[in-house]
Length: 118
Image (tube, rainbow, N blue to C red; front, side, top):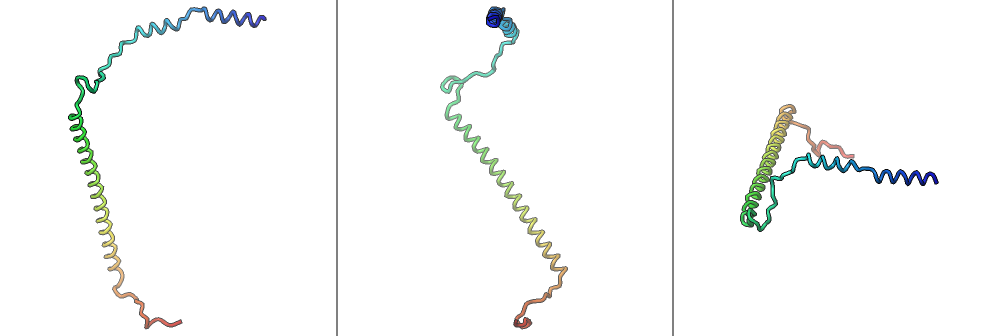
């Protein structure tokens, strides 16, 4: 019984106490500067809205620039591949040339006359 009375009394004290946190919030909101935005929403039919023909021109220019940049990237990659291929071929020719100079031209060749039957 004592526990119930103590619990009820403490609940009543807490519920009737002065709420200081709300006053602190009010003070902070008064000190905070007003926020002003430098942008405004523009309605698609309102003044200042961009017309469809202008947007189509802007998009066409953007698409052309994108295609040009993609073509430039593809061209650069193709040139890189061609350069690598040319370097590889030059290296192979150089190796063939050094192999040809180090070994004599005559090499044992297979001929059916020299082979023995089993």
